[in-house]
Amino acid sequence: MKRNYHIFFDWDQMKFIGLDYNKDITKWERLFPDVDIIQQFNEMARWLMKNRENSKSRKQNWSSFITRWLSRSQRKEVGL
Image 1 (cartoon, rainbow, N blue to C red):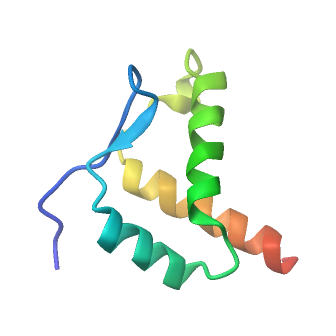
Image 2: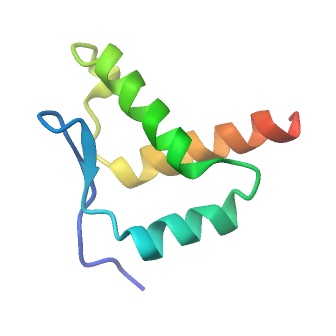
């Protein structure tokens, strides 16, 4: 099922916009059970702030960025 909303990072508020917290957070908690999802969102925001002027922080697909970040965090948690 295709999503009908768009996730992006609001640089003024320093937070992600467009998340359906009930749906998205629940989905990511199920997919990445060893990861503290909220903590990782805070880590993402800190990383983005630190790298704001860097081309690494200019994303086109924020959903993919989030999924890749959480996937790496899951691998770290389980020791892969």
